[in-house]
Amino acid sequence: MDITIYTDGASRGNPGPGGFGTVLLAGPYRREISAGFRKTTNNRMELLAVIIGLEALKKPGNNVTIYSDSKYVVDSVEKGWVFGWMKKGFAGKKNPDLWKRFLDIYRQHTVKFVWIKGHNETPENERCDRMAVAAALDTPNLMVDMGFEQSEDNNPQLTINN
Image (cartoon, rainbow, N blue to C red):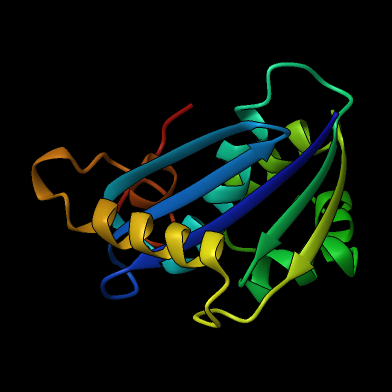
């Protein structure tokens, strides 16, 4: 099946409260997904929007085109950087938890990324932006981005005893 996914992420401060918005289109079907987090980064939300879109697909083997205004996400995949990072165990790279999660779901489909300029009046991208911003502002319902809040890079005093 051919599926189109639009994504966007937002954060109020970097780090700060953040959210993502995802719109999935498949034939006559449309699904919108968004969520907010109390402390995260814009790049994490951009990547999470893509992951959630792909994870929402019920069956593997789809042809998926993802539209994103995130150079971070689009270039990392389309230029093959993430595959090099994976071979090196994501050493020194940010967001390894999300990149690993992305690669697990990415491999289940044929995925093509298309970079689009943000705020260029592309209706679905604008919708994703509004959903991401609204999710970041939904203070009583903000979730914890455990991958961010518990990472050693962002919380140096955290120690894990094995």
